[in-house]
Image (cartoon, rainbow, N blue to C red; front, side, top):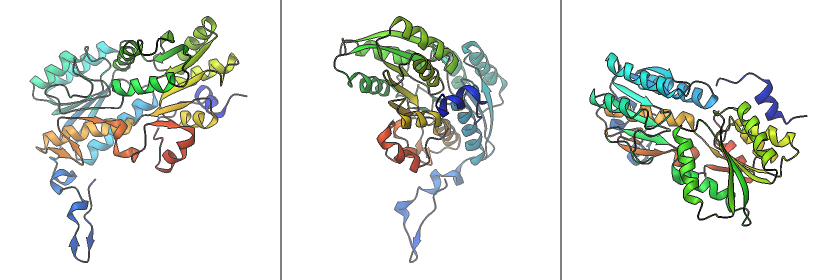
Length: 354
């Protein structure tokens, strides 16, 4: 019998998934405990027209982001129209260019598929004085942790430094090294490109570890199952699988189970969704890096609304800065790397969120 979380993935339909208050004590206003009203929802310009360009609307991560963009815009009295590109770079480019030409929008939040592909469209939007925030994937050739010139924010939790720590956490568990494989989304997608660049950088520091597969799953469990089966057949001594999205990881788990290798090969996941929390509890996944898809788009919308309202920041999100989701207040100071012995601490604060 397959574990419960695997049955949920392969047998069930996919789930679709502040204003600061001053404290008065004895007639004394505790001003230090609140955010200035000038930086909260009370001060924003009403009726702003925004557009959100999602990499797709095909998985729970993306659907959570779409919901966040809608709810956050509504909170600040703005409207938002979303466009999902379904990981089609040409489609996303055309969507952004058409929206720019329409003259219907004052601000964009762009979850790019590929940094270079959206570069020209981001520049075109900025030339039209449209306020732009980037999320998840950067624009053009800007460093991940530095907003592209002219944009008001870069929001993400998959910087090169995060990927480096993720890989090291796996490699450092076995000084003897061995063979490992990596499962990613579309090869040209920004996070896949960054993962490969980090691996190339780490190669000299970990010469005993050999990459035997860097596989495009489209971020889906079905292709991940087939790709993992192929890798295991060619490399039966595989020691580690790194999977950079929780939606594809169940495919790797199923392949290992079928091969009788579940528990022998360590899995390092990125995503930290409900299924992966279950897998970490059962020990079939060694650890997961938690994603915050809701906050990712929420912070982008907040930066855009702040700029359009003439504010330097809004509810803690500053205009013109990189927002690191691995340090988001939503985590309450916890590490983004979730292990079995700590999992209860995340559940106590209401995580995972998708």
